[in-house]
Image (tube, rainbow, N blue to C red):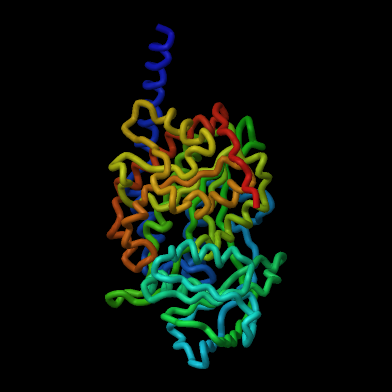
Length: 433
């Protein structure tokens, strides 16, 4: 009888909270926010562009209307920092005395360099039987100068790498990249490489970046933090497709940023949070998660009890409507707590169904997860079949606004005991390097 009563009370509680959510989080508001963030006049919100400045101003205005307070140490909602951006100026490559066409070359380096002899770089061949993604990751983490010869079979991925490299590299102003680690990818079929030369010229400049952060101070546990986050940057202007060159990033990640704003509004209206709530729109996720890395340096990770990072919730998940997945589900009891709070509703959270993609360390949650915070990403993206990902077709018209709204409501419901201070997820294992 005792357990039956407890179960009934839980269902009644879920029903009451669901009514609050339905009144406070409305589809029309969700549509307005995501439409604005993914509009053409935002120019794809690329880091270091006027488009991301416009997006930041919009988010700031939303925070102001909601009534959020700036984070301690910030004069406003912006968390400002500087990066050193290094970008390519000119690259000339020869192999066995023959010039390589520029469209078949991709270079990443923090400084200018010249290679003219075998010991200048290790040669790696990515033959058709190899895994291009693994080869790329191995080269990136090798710490070595590498000349990577890529079989034409991998032209699509090579093009992605080339586009990424053209954006240049960045490092924190106070922690400049002092290494001379350079990677040169060349697309083509090559027999024995008897000689090669690479002359690469780069230029560096200091540029500003800014996360947009607002808080609701905790009522009884102000020194314990719950973070709700998403990244508001995207790719900007990219290679045209059917006359369109704006990568609007509606799903990636205007949808997540919309969730952050919507949840801030919801919890400000409730105004009963025991723990301090931090709502942050990260910059520079697409070029290396630099916004979240900086944020992680400014908060005490031991005070952060949970992080809800929201990334690409624009369409139904592979599990169908009223569902989402949580990266790193098995690393803490974060997901178990969330699902417990959804009893009596039709929504369900699942473990990440794409373990091979290593999504746990591919989004902004990683910056805090690395130092032990139960920081997880919530997503619905079917990444294995998503043909709109990182293309100009990721537009508002491709989204399911009802799905986005349902997911935001589920996050609101499922987070309530963590926000109230009655549940505390277990810490995740710190990343050992």
